[in-house]
Amino acid sequence: MILHTVNKSAFDNRALGDCLRVVATNDAVLLIENGVYGALSSSQSEPAHVESILELSAAGTRFYVLQADCQARGLTDSALLPAVQITDDAGFVALAAEASAIQSWY
Amino acid sequence: MSKILLLDSDGHLEHLEDWSEQAAQQLAASENIELGEAHWEIIYLLQEFHQRFQLSPPMRPLVKYIAQNLGKEKGRSIYLMQLFPPSPARVASKIAGLPRPENCL
Amino acid sequence: MFRHAPYGNALAREGLEAALACGAMGAKASLLYINEGVWQLLEPQDSSAIDCKNQAAMASALPLYDIDEIWVDEASLQQRNLTATDINAGKIIDSSRVQALFATSKNILSF
Image (tube, rainbow over all chains, first blue to last red; front, side, top):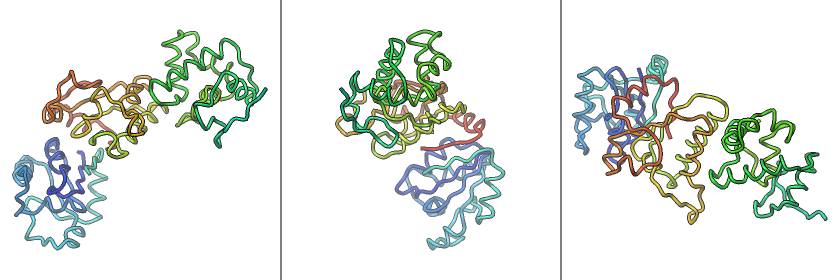
């Protein structure tokens, strides 16, 4: 399993879209820093990342956001896609330990 | 007659343009090396490498490049060690007027 | 893994230096050019007027540093209307091969 981290907002950077294009179904994607905006269920970003996240998640790819980064930015749990799990630093470490390698998209 | 050469903290030429065959002989003398035909051949090949790739090669790529251009007999670290002791990539690049190779021990 | 275009920032050069360092130390490394990184392979480059080292010239030394596995993402080329004749190195691979490359990598350095 590869752990992909994305730390840029999909509204000003292609990191999330570039990641979603090559992520595998047994991989995990962790949205951190400004990357957490990518987890908003109301997002109308172009291209349609929400659809990709839902499709990939249905196929098995796991999605996470870092709770502290959501909290800092005023993103409440209810605003996030249900397909995205909320995790903390310990969860980040556990994912990193589980992964065979980490790819950071920035 | 020796000319005053501007050197960096590693003893390499500060400015590549200052290089001349006489400068090379001065730099070689500071490493206790007297330059002969075999040395010049390597020095000119090193300068060609730097011109072409904009890099000062450490040992492995230097050996490979020499093997490609001057043949397998010369493309060996033992051969270079005899010409440019104790650290051929560093010493030869210094005499050739190039910056110190990165990733070079 | 190269994801950014050359010269606008230091990423491409730093990535190349990391690859050359791996080669010089005998560490096995493969390179993947993807997204904006594919611009690094465009020829001819002449960076003399912007006072930068020529990335393409440096990259052409990679085989001498025993870095022989160079991959280029097909979709990234297509998005930029580039073809195999526009780039100076690398084998073109599709997304599934990119995934396989990730899966078999011990470490991924992204530049």
